[in-house]
Image (cartoon, rainbow, N blue to C red; front, side):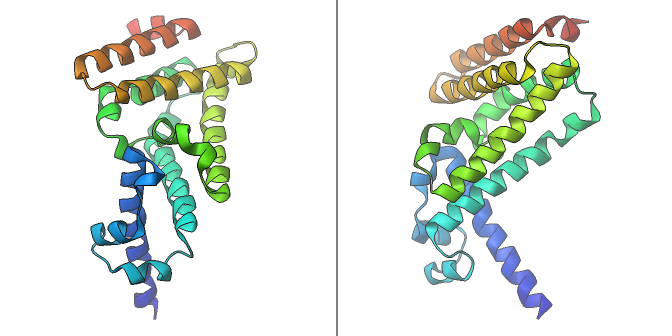
Length: 199
């Protein structure tokens, strides 16, 4: 029996992996159940053995994407909260690599524009993901001694998400990477951490 459960869980993870890759690139509108199951190498009818509805799938995918993002950022936890951690987050989030492979990076730049149209459970999970990232930024700003770290964290988060969304919308790689570099530099200067990276 445990072997059947293990196989079922593996199959569910495969569906979530495929759906997450699609959503990070084209949003939730790009997920059709039949096409998704075909892409995962499964039959259409098997979908309902894993999810109660398409909305249930979307909610689980949003959850999965934020868990993956948190895992990806785990390396930052070895750094003390403050300028160094925040500088590494900015460099990682606004990197040329993150722009080119949205299917492996934070879902917020891809989904922010349609978050208000997501099913309620998916919206709730999206909000949790936003709050977790906000907390990560705010704690480092507080450690740096910034006044009103929560308000500043909201501004920093908006700039990170917006800069990446804009860079992905630009087809010219050189122009997009220039914009990312400018955002990285200006954000760090505004937060008083540019000098730390030079030294």
